[in-house]
Length: 183
Ligand code: 5GP
Ligand code: MG
Ligand code: MG
Image 1 (cartoon, protein in one colour):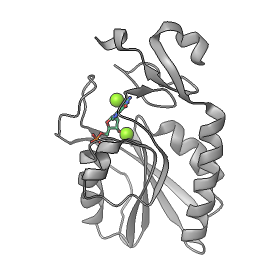
Image 2 (tube, helix red, strand yellow; image 1 turned 135 degrees about the vertical axis):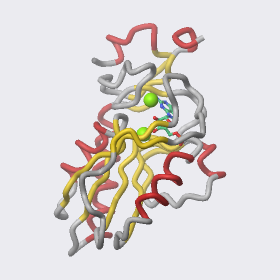
Image 3 (cartoon, helix red, strand yellow; image 1 turned 60 degrees about the vertical axis):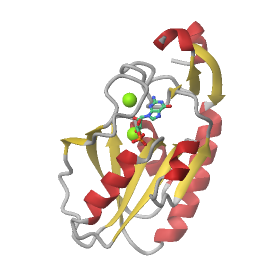
């Protein structure tokens, strides 16, 4: 779906599909340069990072493998619970691997700081993080994020993998959800 199909549910479009794709190609070039000569295991965080993973992975030229984790920190609301649970773990042994966590958005950073510590304890050669979006609140958290697509405001956004109550993940653009949808 595109923003027109979402109609009144969006306050406005924040980033178009084209802007996202352009930025992901820039990030991929930097990531390629960083990992030149080695393999990378991309770890996508379900479900929000599905679109980022698909586009970032195809823009990379270093050899990659992909695996997925599902963690829960949010429920269906718009505020972080601070509680992280593993819903689905990796199939891959991380020993000696260069791990790149691929995320859709960092808000409180609770999910990612927990996740990178968890993966870091499994004997990888390195653990780094790439996220498409970052909110201002993330600056307060002690988690190093090597690659960030866009710094955005405090608003709740949907689309390009990001949901509200599991909807809008298939919206091509990224939009600010209208308040009446969740009020
Ligand atoms: P954190 O632990 O950093 O607060 O939460 C990260 C997760 O919260 C993201 O992976 C995402 O699932 C959800 N989240 C945080 N901000 C937003 C937002 O603006 N829109 C949507 N759809 N999800 C968000
Ligand atoms: Mg996510
Ligand atoms: Mg969600």
